[in-house]
Length: 436
Image (tube, rainbow, N blue to C red; front, side, top):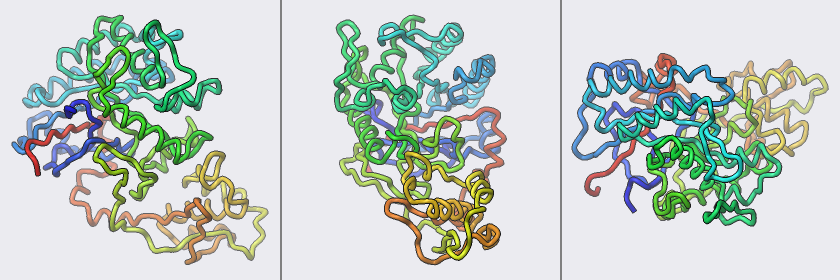
């Protein structure tokens, strides 16, 4: 199959010398991704960008914002999107980069709607004009319309949503739309967007999926089995070139799995699952087998992870834990305790187990500072792994060793990310010229 219809790798640091990449599928980093530094950002405006090496033929996406048209934002960002796109496009033209760097604006699926079937899809009334202008821009520049699709959220938010319709194994509750029959939510959502684009005159615009995935914890339908079933089904569906009823034989131009790693500091306002979308755990260990199109279902774990020493903070068995409430609140406010809640892997480890897990999460977050395990004498440090069954008590990562290893630490600092007024995600499509 052509590379244009494969799930490709999301990468950052595109203004640095690229490493050799060979991949059929990939994943997005999530909100914790590192941004190019200010020097590289300014270089885009003034053309201070290293020339493309002839070994690679690049196609890059710069995503301006992420889901700026969300209903919950109540339109506060709408007036900024097109001016931002126009300004960045002008910079690309000045830098002679516009021919292979394309601007996109990832939209949430709530930007369009349908009363019942995909063929009735339309953009929200408040977005019709701006979507028409955006689609015209994308059509002129040769960029795809990028959308984030989450069947998991449809299932999570609607108790009447058929569970089998969220996956790719066929459904006993298909959606019949005239001559077209939909057996999974992804295709139905995708074709609802196509219908919406058709109604504003851009029904043939290419579509890329900026985010799609399934969490492994945080809800009754979020676990290792369902995450693997969805992601593997999605990959197989896309790589089959089957397409959808409105675009048979034409899969999305690119699909980005969300996400590469768990994000323990992400907001859990939408639900406890928000910190558990990763294909890999926070330390780069694969959660489940997944065939990304390379013929093997085995994902490679991160090697030589610079863990902190193998020690944990647990509840002191010699102390009365009746007054532990405030300490638990502190620990779980600062650290991640979502795995203890309903739908989490550590939900059934008992009260003392919950206390120990919370204490340890905070202790590891504080880089194993002995004072952070005190909790007024209720905590104690142990050198015996307190993990219980599938509930893994984590050992943190030594950031100092990570920074010492990184050759990009100067341009990838959190300060650099904060300098960007809008979140700019850089999607890199590596088309390898020749074989290795």
